Image: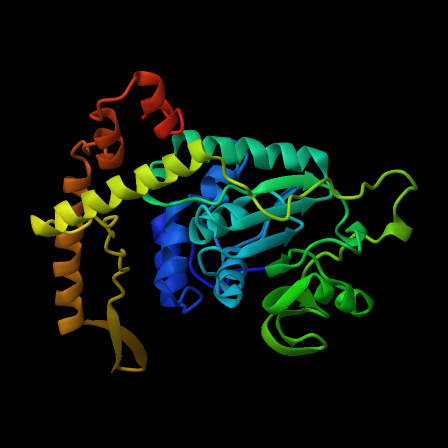
Length: 357
């Protein structure tokens, strides 16, 4: 599934294409997509396909097409502080983007059938926290991933504000999914080849809306599995109780981040957005046809459009030469502020989440 937008050269290029095609429509969703490089969730040797609008699968590892994730993120209508359940959480790519919007006081849970995929998701999450430049720009709700079958969730499990299921749901499991949703919550899942948004409007009332025609592999049903080969999902705490030390880190980082933003505004320095490259235009010369004797001969027809393309080509060549210049590494102002605090080195390391850059 996918192929709805043009392939990008990198993550920002892909997001530009998704915006242009109206799959990404809100600033909050755009920021989350730009912060998480889709290529980081691919295995080595397959990254060249990361910025195409196509699904990718290798063994048990699977990523849906970017246009699908875009529609899901928009349909969930995420807000800070909400609880989120990802059924079939896979690589953790979607859950990590969701965590950037939920913030530190949300709940972010994922259930995945395959233990090797859960380990893969945890590795990718750790890499994001330790290495990504985006981590210090957001307040993050860290996802918790557990191994289990989505159809084995305990009947007394707590409910969620937002739920996404990343596998095709049979009609006879629709009500099972709905019960996991709080009143006022939103559930997004594929039902009968339609990505569907379901809003719980009351204790026994729901409103449904079809979003997009899709093709998903079905949820693995228990009857089709070898007895003993499935697991009841592990313990997912209904709420994350923060200790005082963790709360202090959240609020110190928030205060410093707000101070940096105020400082930049006072100096009239705009917050840096990632540079956008101009798209290359393929020059197509218009031909006209004239009769010479009994033959139809094509003749090139120069036009104002040709001249405009020549100008664009010159600009592109200038941009390419500028791109060859070595780029300065992005400044991490939050880290700089933390490292200047009159604190022991161990506390500074804690405030930076033990990141080395």
